[in-house]
Image 1 (cartoon, rainbow, N blue to C red):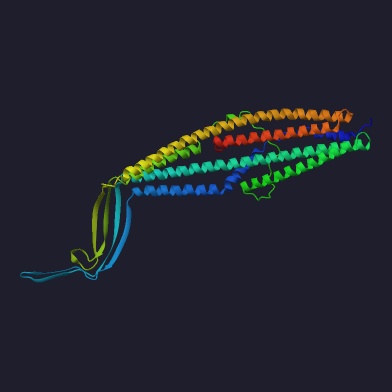
Image 2: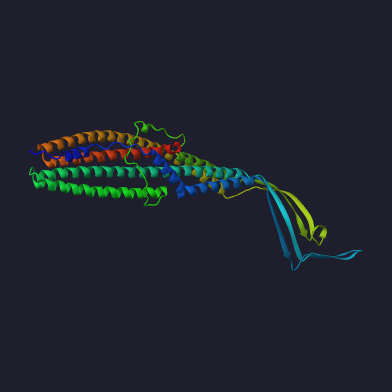
Amino acid sequence: MKTFPLVALLCLLAAVRPAAAQPAEDSLLVRYRRMALDCDDDLRAAAKHIEASAELERAARAERIPTLSAGGDFRYTGNPLKYAAELPGVGPLILEGQNWKYGASATLVQPLYTGGRITGAIRMAESETRMSEARRELLRTEVCYRVDLQYWTTVARRERMSVAEDYLRAVADLERVVRERVEAGLCDRQELLTVEVKLNEARYRLLQVRSDFETGRMALNALIGSPLDAETPVGTSLPEVGSGASGLSAAALHPEIRLAQERIVWERGNLQYVDARYKPQLGVGANAGYYAPGYDFRPDLSPNWTLYAQLSVPIFQGGKRRRERSAAEYRIGMAADALHRVETDLDLETRTARTALDEAQERVALAASSLEKAVENERRATEKYVEGAISISEVIDAQLYRQTAQENLVSAKEAARLHFAELLKATDGYRFQ
């Protein structure tokens, strides 16, 4: 038996070594989260919504202070009032009004009792502000979650591309060895054709995963506000999730729960606001101005003023108050039911993410063990083929087993990372990073 080139054999054995684990690019992920938060249009709109809610809250509080208004009017009467009388010993008396009537005044009004209308409006406005803040927190969590999913998916595609490149190199090295064996007359040309087919398949697979990686990076660029064709750096290998990651504790109060709780507060404020319309309303006011004709039948502008108190008491509304109050109470009950549903859904989402993460970590351990055995199997198959103890098909199968084991490990690590992102979202873990 002839001895084959040592270089080809060493290259073949080097190709079947498992890829070394790369450190996690956590700093990149954190930076991309910040970039996505800075460029997200929904978050900018949410910030404006908070400011608008705060302005409405201040406007509701302004209902408690006096209001000052000014006004004036100008009238021409074609047939003004006229009074004529014959007084004994005096003679005829004629009193006639003016055709022109005009004046200007200022009015100051202070509500004293509104039945809870102002308090209810303030309560609703405060609740709306807090709901806007909770919605912004939910949006921030959603943006970070989308970035995590896309980032780890892109890293997984980058690692699959490395796996495909390793497999291509291994098949290319095997093709050179087989070609030299054919030239030496130690094996049939059919073995070379078989390996060449596998080499083309490896090239085709590399083209596929490279295209997947580029499209994934473009999607990541779209999320973080970078040009779509930018060569944004990502990690070359998926880091494994820590063993205690599934024990991540939930936030004290998830924004989604806060939002549901504030909806109940808002509905209670609305009940108070609606009910106040059917309660007595009491206010005081003052009016001062210049009018013509003036007092004592003066024809020119004359000053005058008025102080008053105004009381309004609803008496009969045809059952409208009872029905509107009942409708508001039903809406409070609906908001309470929605809170219970949110709590149940979040608990389910958290438990599901923890279970899925634990299972994914088990799959990572199994896939890593399988890869170690597949590498050993490929090494032994290569040695036996060089010795002429087995056929080329068994070496090809061993290479495929190793590639499949690598793919399974990448898929398991990707699943673990994605499930960990789901757990971060369910527990509001992004708020603490």
